[in-house]
Image (cartoon, rainbow, N blue to C red; front, top):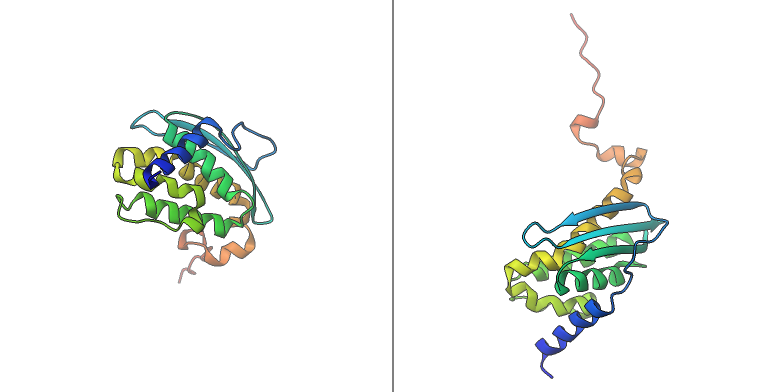
Length: 169
């Protein structure tokens, strides 16, 4: 069996037997994303506890690539620290943006490496990235209270910093 066939089998297996499918409670944030190019949709929930992705659940409609990618992504990020999960997202994004020139690191990406061939088809890249972008947005939304904390204010933009008005002469 050649590598492309094996990768196709991994994608089809995740499509036929999706992991973590079905919206679950409790959750910290939910997002709904649509791929306007083809109409694929995903509603995704994320639960974060102490900086670790405790759960990802989703409902999706669309092609086998978008649905398999949601299964792979959720399985990869659950149980990871946010920073480590975000690094996985960056690795997957780089693979998808490579247009077939990058092989990716199988030890890091695990089953997500199966999408390497998808990167050769720009119209399909959006399908593979849909759930990853939804997860990234939901995680950012879930972390918003942490961003609003006093520790985060040290990195506030100039608009957020209180600047006393100058006294009039």
